[in-house]
Image 1 (cartoon, rainbow, N blue to C red):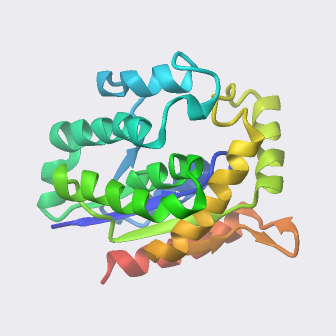
Image 2 (cartoon, helix red, strand yellow; image 1 turned 120 degrees about the horizontal axis):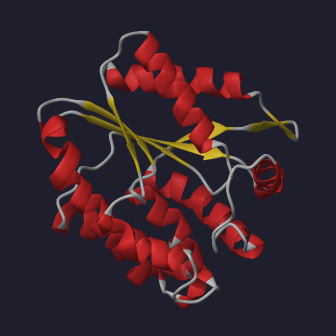
Length: 222
C-alpha cells in the first residue's frame, strides 16, 4: 500500500495555500505523489454536498444532522477512491489530500454536544474505514488557526475576490464549535498539530510551509 497524508483545518485557516506550497515544493524536488481535494465539487458524487452547502436543506448548518451530512461527504470520497486513486494507492503511491474523513470529524462533530462527539468519531471511522474500506491516513496535519485569526483571513479572501462564503463560513458560532471540536479531535485521534499563530500573530505562510514540508517528507520516507 501507499501513503495517505492529509492536511486538515477549519474553514479559512489557510489550508489551501499550504497545500499549494507543499505540492509545489514536492514537485520541484522531484518527489512522486498525487494530490487529492475533497469535496469534488465538479463531480456528480458531490451533488448532495452542493445542495447542503448552498442552503437547499436550510440556511442553518444544523438543519442537517451530523450523521446525515457525513454520509454526503463519505459517498463522494468512496466514488473518488473507486474511480480515481484507489489503484494508485494500492500500488504504493503517495497521496496528499486537502481534506478527508477528518473534515467530517471537525465540521459535523462540531454540531454535537460535548458528550456525544467521541461516539460520533468512532461511528465515522467505522463507516468510512471499515464499512466503506477507504484507507486510513498515515498522517493528519491539523493547521491550528484560532477563529479570531481565521475571520481575518476569510475577510481578506472575500475582499480580494476569493469567492463567496457557504453556510458553514457564514455562521461564526458554528466556526467556534468546529475549532473547539478540531482541537479535541486532534488530541483524541493523535493528529500532528501545526500551530499557525505565535504570540497572537499569524506566522508567515512560508515559515508554516517549511514545518509542514519537513513533517511530510519524514512520513514519506518512513
